[in-house]
Length: 219
Image (cartoon, rainbow, N blue to C red):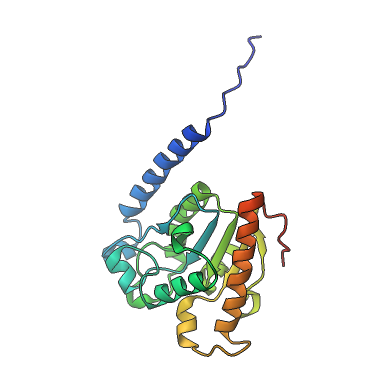
């Protein structure tokens, strides 16, 4: 019987080129998507922003009015606060990747419907596959419940690491929630977010040094 030849592994450069091609195809697919009714009311598809080679991915709920206008995630008031949180925690926004569960703005900034999230999930899962982050940070109830398939509220499980498909996932408060809860007293959402972002930065530094999430304690 003829010996089966092993397919040679791609070099790092070839792998990067292949991933870049797949990334552009994924982006084009999302930008042209008209599968659900949100496409009829959007101005722009908000695919994501940042470094697609980052080992940390932040996932929000969906674009707001400013995001819809600019085609970029987290650029309104909540986005400005998120950038401030990054800066306070020693994180440069350009070094992470940010996206949302749905890529088009739900009218009146309502919560996306289950059907809308199911339809848009193909784009999110492709992003996760191609970025292959070690850490995923879920901003708010909607992405937390969608990814972790839990009914627990964000106030109960924020700041804890969960294992999901070999990745470390942490829920955090959405910055829009922090805008509605301005207190910075000990135990307040803002204070807890400060604690959480420090843990995120600490774990991210270790991941970049070791290349794994073995240091993380889940639950």
